[in-house]
Amino acid sequence: MARDYYEILDVPRNADKDTLKRAYRRLARKYHPDVNKEAGAEDRFKEINRAYEVLSEPETRAAYDRFGEAGISGAGGGPGFQDFGDMGGFADIFESFFSGFAGGAPGGGGAAGSSRRRGPMRGDDLRLDLRLDFQEAVFGGDKEIRINHLETCSTCTGSGAKPGTKPSTCGTCSGSGQVRRATRTPFGSFTQVSVCPNCEGSGQIIEDKCNDCGGSGQKQVKKKLKITVPPGVDSGTRLRVPGEGDAGQRSGMPGDLYVYLYVNEDAEFRRDGINVLSDIKVSYLQAILGCQLEVATVDGKAELTIPPGTQPNTVLTLESRGVPRLGDPDTRGDHLMTVQVEIPTKLGPEERDLLEKLVEIRGDQAGKSGGFLGGLFRG
Image 1 (tube, rainbow, N blue to C red):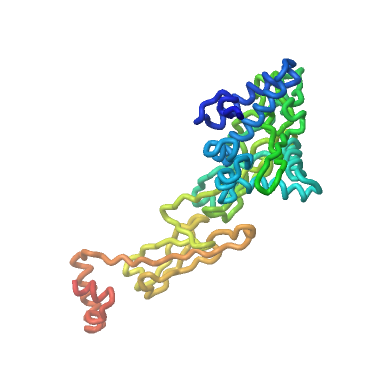
Image 2 (tube, rainbow, N blue to C red; image 1 turned 30 degrees about the vertical axis):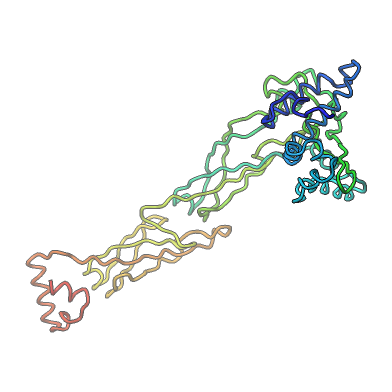
């Protein structure tokens, strides 16, 4: 009768993935045929490998927990087949089997995947969120940012091994970075290729680890960068900084840094595409008579003409005083100003007399017009 796989690895039945991996590595090193020459060591090593292969995969572990050996080998017929009634258990087997034909032979796909893992690996991309003031988003400019990213360890030059030493070939996979297992199913026998659990696909084991990076070949580094924000960016704009992501492994290219921009609200200006919006307050006399006003724009102060008889909520335009178009900074939007007419709530005696005389001059029309003057005079 087959021994219990949890007993083989000497772990509890609720052991997590990390516990399983530690137990496997410890036992694999102890019973590897190249290390242990005692009788039965090779069989024990195979038994350990088989136990870990089953328990390290969630699907096969669930099948084993439910039906034992019959649930993963097809032995016992009915129960083992029923456990995979949703085909989930066979999906990985079929994927491994059929992907092999892409390489010209069964298992080719797995081997190719292992080769890619053992070769240069590109580093991860990183993301940084950066907030800008309104003016910075309009005109752009240089910004200094700070990032944390992985860089290749300068002490071991990325090998992970202590200077003067080098990694050794993994005994579990003989340096191939992959292990194979044959699985019997109701459809026949299939060979499944997976990443070696001992070296995690690298094909090498580091015995004397670099003190600076702990054997990873990489170090976390804080770094200052100066980036250029182009004119016309807006919230959601993404800037790519090539090569400033995490360092690659085994001489792989580094990843990129992606900076996502968010623009702070401004107390005076708003934005609609490449147009700038703002409000301007004028007195009722300025609205009636017209005037020249100095107004604030993103470029500084500018002159704005208020035409005589300007109505409340009229929108006046200062051309080419808006936001530069992203990618075409010579093209700018406009500055649109909405006129807010301020009606006084209290009048002095002299001002009231003058306005009442104006009503007399214009006849009763002003008092009946319903306009803002009429409302004022009725007060």
